[in-house]
Length: 286
Length: 298
Image 1 (cartoon, rainbow over the protein chains, first blue to last red):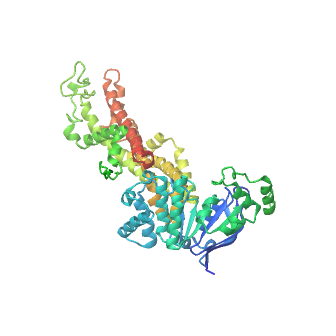
Image 2 (tube, helix red, strand yellow):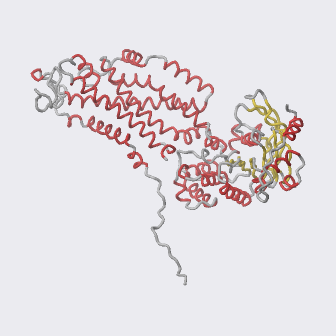
Image 3 (cartoon, helix red, strand yellow):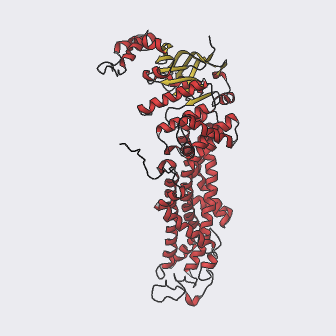
């Protein structure tokens, strides 16, 4: 058995804004070295909360009440901010959700890419620039010279997302957290971006935690999946098992709810109310 | 038979990022405001060469002459003379020196202090924010003109006191706006991205957030210069600016006010110059903001 890169155990959190409502309930998940795990759920299921907890950027209103986040044998939750800073951006990197806002609008792409390299990999300005150029080529950007000198608003959404992927992989992290990196993009661009992430990931052996609400994306890119509802893990396992032989009624209903290109008349069935009722009962919420 | 097709056409030129400079002048407000201010700066610097007369030279025989296009004008006195026979145009030209000096120095210093405190308050929040914000609130409760007159009265009159008074009063404008803008910027994803990249907090503030505040800051500085010109005029109007033998626009307005019934140009000329200068600063400010902001630009 290969060693786990990331192990989350018994993670619980409450939202102080909503009167101490639990947002994570005893969540556990693992990510193997070089594996890709999908983290799936509806809005508010807690998938982004987990990602933020790992990155240490939870909003002040969300409080962790228990659990561990074990990254390479160290608990991220009990680390000092300084230690955390040295891990973030060198061993753990983020591909943000919205490429429109995740790049600094006032600075050129080249400068933004070089920043991380200079800070985290101790490169000189010149090496960092050459390296950034190479990275842009790696993420299949044509004319990387021009992109280096561009401001974010001069690039398309897909291009910006490529830049962000380049930035995330630039520091050669062991764990990349992709927070719905394709939601803001066209479907055609989405596919290219997924392929690119997969390519970058497998070439470097990076572990990826892929947050999404789209089971179709999970099927394309992940090798294991964790399904959440209301902050609770509902189902988890290798993608094939979960998608082909779902155990839980909710999972089955979700899969049925997705569109079927081969049978346009099927699918798009809303999850039945009875399934939700059962689910809430099981979790223990009214 | 199929011929190999060659497509000829202009070789694809690499798209150049539009030059910032050209962008600036495409903005009409910048063109108007900027060229007027530039002209004023040149005039102020070269006042001794440009002014047709000595601004202090009195000639009681030539008192209260009307401007050149009215009856009874004397050649050489383009905007007429005041009751002591001093050339109005020359006095306006020399007056621009004080006005611009005060505007530039006081706006820059106020911007420096306000920006530093605003950045710290907006970024670090907590106690830093509470203390700085309360000070700003208290500060803004004082009526500004009264406070400036009080301050100059305490410091004694002179250019230095006028500048100090404006800085002490107006740093809060910068502080408030910069704090709010820092707060807004720090919620944006690129800041979160920088945090998850493990950048030190101070570095995020100076390298990531600050460049996004510069456009609004430049606009504010320009607006503040307009305000400073007015404040300086007010203080010299009440006789608290530089000594009365140095020509200032405010001083000229005060003098012209008393003679409005028989020599209206003594009031109108400095008022018109003051008005245009402030308008130019304001136009330059809002034009610059639009031209420099990379988001608004496209």
